[in-house]
Image (cartoon, rainbow over all chains, first blue to last red; front, side, top):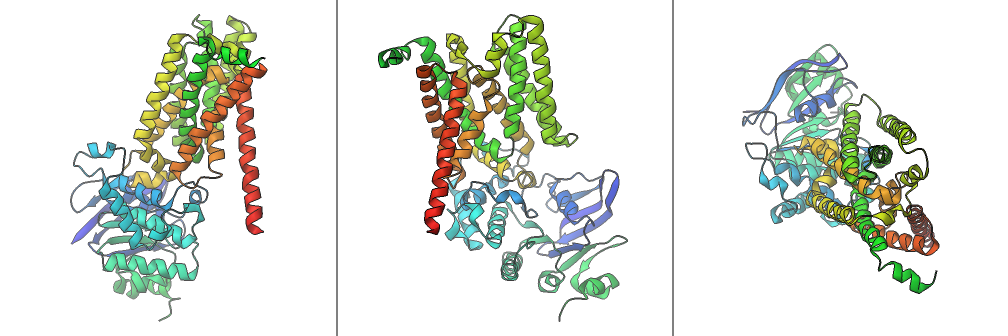
Length: 247
Length: 280
């Protein structure tokens, strides 16, 4: 069953087209790895799906027909510098993810979004997300004291508070050491397989595809590919990209 | 000055009004300052204070010297325009502020020269002065009420302001109206500057926004504790600075800034010492 449908998407920066008439649809429960060279438009596509970047043509739809003001998407941005010296506790950061889920009413606006405090439900939800990511014991720590891996877990937990059934990850393991990377992939895999979360993940790491991906979206200079991992393995593009992979 | 004279002054409305109004202003300035500093928006406050100077020059040119009702709309509109300029990325953020600051300063100077002359008035606008002692009961009430309303508004949207300060693009992605809250914050900043600048001086008012946060982040670990500590620190430094300025007959704005700097340096020194002791 198609869950997220992107039709005929085109994005450009200052007249330079980075994504040209791309169409694909993501099934519920899939884990799509988005790969491609630098500048191929991977992050642009993620931003487009989130509505942060306006498409020149085409549309993004969620299967439940809410159109583009999709309130229930979790998002892990590309690693940003600003987490470094921000005075906030892990709990404060994670809870802020709850603010997105408030605007689920059909009108795109609800009175609950004005409520100035976090409800008991939202607090429990944030605690559960931290528990899930194994950082509940760090809840009162300052977020700039965390290691790289812990920071990503914190941001994942924040995304979980906002996410319904769809999660977009933009290079979640950039800058992490091997152990932290493996831990994070484990968590992402669990979210996908156990919690049934549909995940789109931008990655630079070919080795992760066989471990996690059900589908692959390869954005290339000349051609794009979208299909299951097995189909991808059969293509020239896939063989070349996965070439370095150790079986 | 004898202690009797000092305390006597604080019973007179011409000292008491600005004293109390200043407490309200320093509280709201510090609280919104926490978001502004984290968003790297501190310079917006500085840019707007130059616009504030121009608006004061205009108000005295039209014979309503120092009227809040002239300054408020001018500075608020400038704040919104400045934000739009930055968001469009047509002009780089700091360049936009430089354009606004110098432009407003130029306009203000010419207007002041052509109307009242570049005399003591201009000096008072720029650096604040004992002219605060001419605060009318109307101004006093307006200032305190505006400050309290803004404080309530800020606290009401506190979690959203946290979100847009911490991570704008995540906020947008999950459907929070980030640009609405940014505009809101810019308007709060504009109002704070207008109600504070006559006392502090247009050139010194942004220190009320920046210093309390910078000091508070040295010993607070959460956003909430930084906000509370900044508010308390700001009121304390204001009260001490104001009292010193009365006792020493120095300009209140500048005296308060000096106290702010002293407290900031004190906490820096404590931090360095602590680190030193930790390492043994």
